Image (tube, rainbow, N blue to C red; front, side):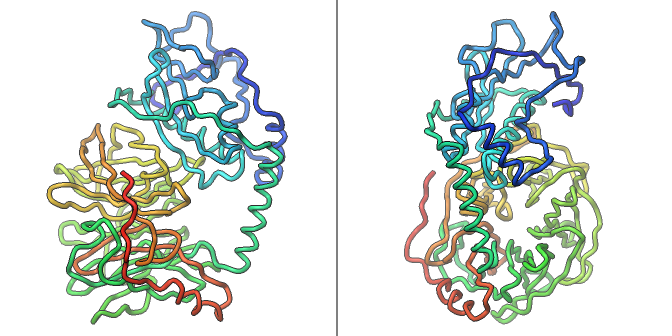
Amino acid sequence: MTAIPGAEVRFRAGPEASALPRGVAALLMVERALARPGTGALFDRVVPGAEAWWSAGATVDVVVDLTGGGEPAGAVGGPAVLRPVFDGDPSEAALVAALLAGAMPEIAILDGLTRQPLAAGQPSPENGGGLTGGLDAVLSRTLVLVESLIAAPRRPKPLAFHASRRHSGRAPAAVLARALARDAAYAAYKLCMYTPHWRVGWRLHEGPGVLERHDLEGPAWRTLPDPGHRFFADPFPIVWQGRMAMFVEDFDHRIGKAVVSVCEIAEGQAGPVVPVLEEAWHLSYPFLLVEDGTLYMVPEASLSGEVPLYRCIDFPTRWERCATLIRGVEAADATLFRHGGRHWMMAVTRDGAGGFSDTLRLWHAPRLLGPWEEHGLRPVMVDIATARPGGTVVERDGALWRPFQDCTGGYGRALGLARIDRLDPDHYEETVTTRIEAGPAWPGRRIHTLNRAGPLECIDGSAFMPRLPILRPWMAARLRPRHATSRPRVAF
């Protein structure tokens, strides 16, 4: 919170918190010894220096109540009080019980006087192994929500959040045993399979696509072949200078890093996949846009801490970096579009803790090259089900539609569609309409990207890829796309 301009942070001791379940301290110690030796964590006990304590009579503007008590924490005429709750319960014991039960609790920040929710979010467990990782995931996003209210106070429309839910958590020893067994099983799986392994699906047609139909029906999807030790994902198609191509993430399992590659489509057939862009860091999600007659690419380069811009100088294989749109941010899947006379950019961000897919931020600028200014809601949302972009924002019948990834069942578990209902520098509202899972038309376990350029429509999804080449034809036959016979679940 000290990063908020003009903010000073002071501490005051509160009542003793409710006791944690027995064995929790031992479990945390064992987890950290096994997985995170010598590292700190957000749940470590705070020991402020003498200068950081709240002196008697000091004037404060905002109190963040972390005592876990059940009584209203605010007073009429007093400073604003923010109280984090986890599935409606403010106690650390409730948070730990939820994580021990295998649940990722919803976070809400309540007004300490009225108990009305001011902000809420659903954190991601994707980078939160064990109780240690789960606590870091929840507490990091709790901090994000608290900081957002302090930096930009707002009273949004009424939020729906869970009433208090009780979890019958497993014993810490059982949790550790299960985690060790899960890790062992995953290690054995990795000996047999490349994981994760994604694949690209594409088709050529002039009729309504996924965005219009809200399902995967229509002409059969064709799979872009890969050599097994590499996978292709995040397809972005383009029709440019009379040629048709799709740019993809090209990940090499042998080195654990991806480049951007391109595959041209000619006479209804996919050509070879050719690398076109490589950096010292991982590249993916090769977002394409056209500005003033020039083709640009904004690939994900989150490990660099920047959002870079590349210009095409010889389509489709030669690109040069021409600008940095945003610096000092770990941003993934940056998606740019125009609305209301301005350029907009959305991306999921992470500041060193928690998951990679639950925190959506927005920026806007008068021109592509900036200057880029962050949206008034910082972040726009914390939600593992809807935050992460899944493709180009498209206008249909006067409305903006954005594909997103639903990661509630794991990274890229399903594809969703949301209609953007309100967007300006201080407001963002959307309506989620559709959730699409892999099925007969696109077999596999996950689906997380949707894009189209003219007749070329592209998706992707995860698949099983045996390390033994002799088994790959058999697996490919099992995962061959078919014409869809059933519609997806529409749960909104």
